[in-house]
Structure formats: C-alpha cells, structure tokens
View (cartoon, each protein chain N blue to C red):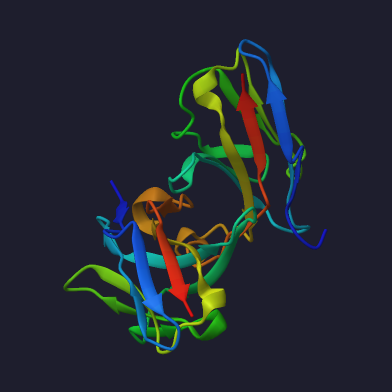
Length: 120
Length: 115
C-alpha cells in the first residue's frame, strides 16, 4: 500500500481481555517495528522484525506481549490479560531493511497513524 | 546503551522568529540521528536525518539540524517559524554497530508558535 496501515484505530477493552493489533506495512519494506507511546512520552521501542523473524524483542515489557509476522508482511501485536497500564497508542513503522546494518541504519522509518488502546 | 535527551518539554516562539529545539544523544558507536514531527492525532512524520558528511543537514518544511560530535548534539533549527510549525518534535538515534535496527526516541518537545 501507499502507507503503513494500522487497525483498529481505536480499541476499548476490559481489564483481563485479549487484544490483537494489526499492522500492514508499505509494500516491499522488509523491516517492521512496533512502538508504544503513552501520553506526553516519546515512542518506546517494543520489537523489530527483519523479514519473518524478530531481530530484536528487547522492548517487550513482559510475556503478556507477543508479536508475529508469519509471511514477512503483515504483523500482529498480541496482548494477553490486558492491564490498565497497557493503555497507550501502539505505533507500527516499516522501512527498507538491508542485510548490512550500516546501510540499514540510514533507512527512514515510516509510521502508521497508530492504534489507541484503552483498557478499562 | 543508546539514549536521547530533549531537555525542553516546551518551546515558545513568535511567528517569524528563529526557532531551536534541542537534542543531545549518547551512543557507544557512530550515531545515525533523526528528527520526526507529530501533529495532533496523526502519525510521526520524518523531517531529516544525519548519516555522515556535512554536519548541517536540511530537511522538510525549511527545517535544518546541525550535528555536533564534540557536544553530542543534534539541534533542530528553522530561520523563521510559522504558526503551522506548532507540533510535537522528536529526536531519535540509532547506533548501527551495536544496536542493529532499533531507533530510540527522546521524550519530545512541544513547539508552540504564536502569531
């Protein structure tokens, strides 16, 4: 597609429920990132995919959070047993990913509009 | 570990005056530096980046930024501010030799330009 698409744009759920957030990256972008942004804060890194594999998942806060990208395109962020503290805007971004990290470091991330999650 | 600091939560500028939004960084290797802007209820938009070469980089909407290695800074500037520049600005850094693709963002600076 023309840009990074995220669905749903808004999700309200109850504490303890399971949530899935979807990201459809720009066609041809092999790198995909998930960030979380709380009110008044900068985006906080969660996980980064290069192709189908998670190259860096060091930002996932705990084992309730999980993300997949089975075919190297669309990604789903899954949150189990949601807590009120999980309320935030979840941002997805994609970029051209090159095998050489020095080259890929120059790549610009293109962000989606985000999925706003509210846990009541 | 890499990190970014934006020391000002808010910057207020009169329209037509020059603006500066400050950013300092910390990485163990060579930095790749970025500025993004976020308008209300919209996604982050790329403004400019420093990779190598000339320390002064020019970006979208008349913005520029100066890389200063000795001061580990990458301040965002614009010679003449517009009311439409009012938004949230984020500095970000990537240490490609040690951290792969991960991009780390600062806390953000809210720019307010008054007529």
